[in-house]
Image 1 (spheres, rainbow, N blue to C red):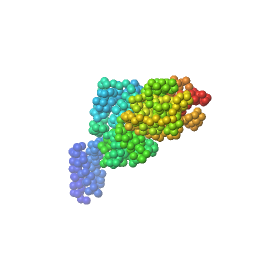
Image 2 (cartoon, one colour):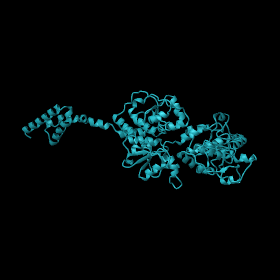
Image 3 (cartoon, rainbow, N blue to C red):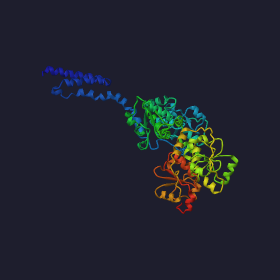
Image 4 (spheres, helix red, strand yellow):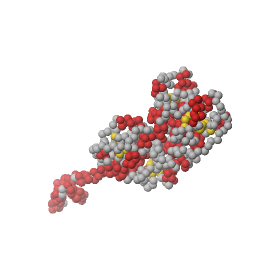
Length: 590
């Protein structure tokens, strides 16, 4: 190479260096490519300039030029929401029991009612502030970060979505009360119509993009709150091509699911977005609605505007199925999303009066017949009734009770009886949960009546037809499902010997008497859950071993057995002989 060539080449390098040095930080992207291209065009530079130091300097500045792109990529909505979903704790951020809600409030929880202002004005939990769900992200200065927060709505769906939204925003002090206003007011807890002033707090620091996404979801929630509220509407959606996603755990899904549903457990929802279409309707469901509300909130935050929720859940779907697998229109047409079975059962149990709706003395029963002219219903089987019954009694076998509501008046006293009390207590519970507050039981039953030498009859009495009472269709479905599937033996452990064998084999005896009775003596190893508190203590009742409820002489055990089955505990039986028979037999007590 000639000296002239070398000089020209050196001059070019010097010019490149000057341009690169004068360009400033803002020009780095423009300056950088020039030396790089030159280096590629000069594969054999002369030794003095073999190390192109000047050309390296602009390249070192490249990350500075790329910084804005790196900052833009730092926000990942899907990753943030996915982290929240994957780390949802046990219990699903939910406080399900009224007693636990009351304890939380007493300990200082801040309560937010996310219903509309008119709903709040008609009645709310005392002390609760009102922030309608659509305005939640716009009112974070009213949501504390340093004390427990409970959100509730009518029956759990809006509270679930609100909890998901606030948790996504980093409010890890928030939980839901899924029972909501329906459960609270249904349990006759204290209510208020006085508006509570919201506190003023420093809002949590939230990425603006995340806050915008959450607010876009909440503020655009339509009328109906993305709900598919009845089994009938769900079936219509399925027929029209909707995709069902079951967000329960795999173990729950394996035990039964809506046909055709895809199982994506809630915590894995964001990790499986590729399985969730955006070009057709999607409906999420769980057991009873709360987890599907969380799922709804998660997916809408991520822009899945085609998603709705089925709050009645798998339990309502299963209960509404006929033997053919088709949905009975009479049951499905009015199943509403704001009804909660456990809350309704709790409301009824906790309000049981002294005497537990039983007339146990024969003379008192005869006086009631003479003075109140009640309708007597014998709930034994037809062949038992035909062999002899109390004069004037009609026959409606227990398993057919809900199919004969047009024979049961709501405006006249009604007494139910069976052979010796178990079936009568079951019938009393079923009718009571359906709203028949005019029904009582005669626990001594046919045995007590006939063995006392009272008048009997073998002539059938024709039932009069009455206008059936308006009942909640979801409760009707649950009660009917229970009654028609009662097995032979009526869930009874009928003798002390069989009770002892069952306990030895691993069954848990559960005493449903009052604490004062329990303290005076009980079956060894039995826990005590008084009947009025059963629904509030479901988490204390195992579902993976046999449970046998008992009381003093059978009536409360019959009610408890029916109530627990209606709430879904199929592992429960009753011990009608009761503690008196156990103690008299010399079995182990404490």
